Structures are given as C-alpha cells and as structure tokens.
Amino acid sequence: MPNTREQDRLQSLAPDRSDRIFSQQDLWYFKIREGDEIGPFRYRSEAQSNLDGFMEQLRNKLQHTQKASQTLNPELPGKKYRTNPLSLPSISPR
Image (cartoon, rainbow, N blue to C red; front, side, top):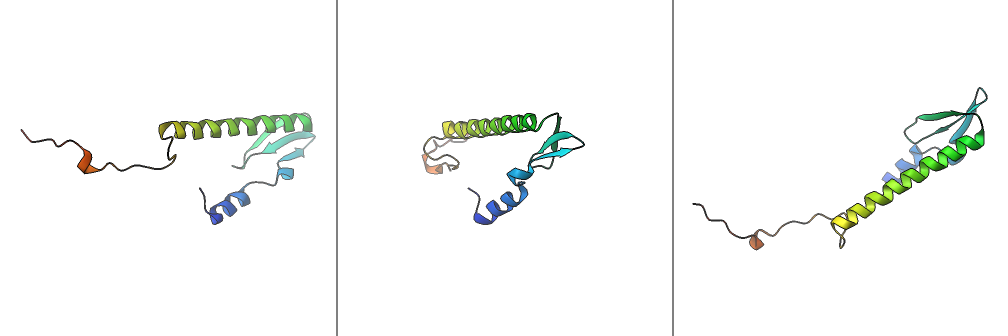
C-alpha cells in the first residue's frame, strides 16, 4: 500500500478528469496518465466512450492481478514467507 507521499505524487501525475478529454482542430482526444494522447475521435461522446472503455480495461486488469495474488497466498496477500530452515529435511552428504 503506498504511503501518503506516494499517493500525493501519483495524484499529481494524474490529469484532472475534466482535463482528460480535449479538442484540437475539431477532433477529440483523451489523455492517459503516462501523458499519451489517444484519438482522434469525431465527437466528444466518442472520446468519452473510449476513455470509459479504457478505464474499465484497467480496472479489470487490476482486479485480475489482485485475484491472482490472493490465489497464490489467500491468507496474507502480498506477504512473502521465509522458510524455517529447521523444518527442512536434512540432507546428508554422500
């Protein structure tokens, strides 16, 4: 989980939602966090629809990643375990 300063940094990188969709030479685009511009679209509603679809794909990917993490370790997701060396079978040299 990011700390407060990390959250502030990430929020400052994300464009304000009202600034994500913009018009340039009668064509519509939207910006993503990485700074890329996606488009052109003929109508603002088309840009909005594509932005909504893009955001939904990201949410689905995030949920899939979180579920996969929980499947690997359902009790404590995100935690790494250390193996107790005393619990390992001893191997004697030949």
